Image (tube, rainbow, N blue to C red):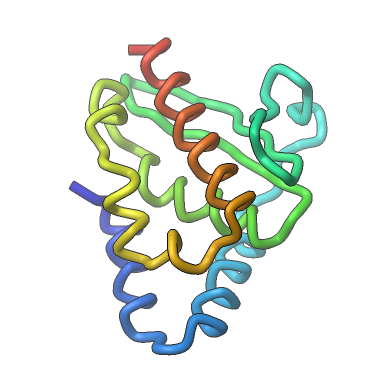
Length: 136
């Protein structure tokens, strides 16, 4: 069910043996992501439950889900980029069907993120699901 973009990330993670290399790759994904305009960094778009500041701006066009995201932490920007690859372009009704825990588990993130980062990642997934459900 994962998108081609997410599959490419998973393949890269399989190729990279060392978690430090994977960590650097996550940061590079975040750096490659276009920045969110500061005008969208408002309390209504801020994700609660993250140690870092995180903003997610949902966008639905032609019944397909997308979002912009940003964070003040580079690793979190990378996690946002991974979530973008996982969810972007899905029909709004399909977002809730994605088993994010299983898909992200394929990357080994659960074993290598701090508990605060893991909680923040879960909060971002929950926010994405809620935003999609409200637009379905």
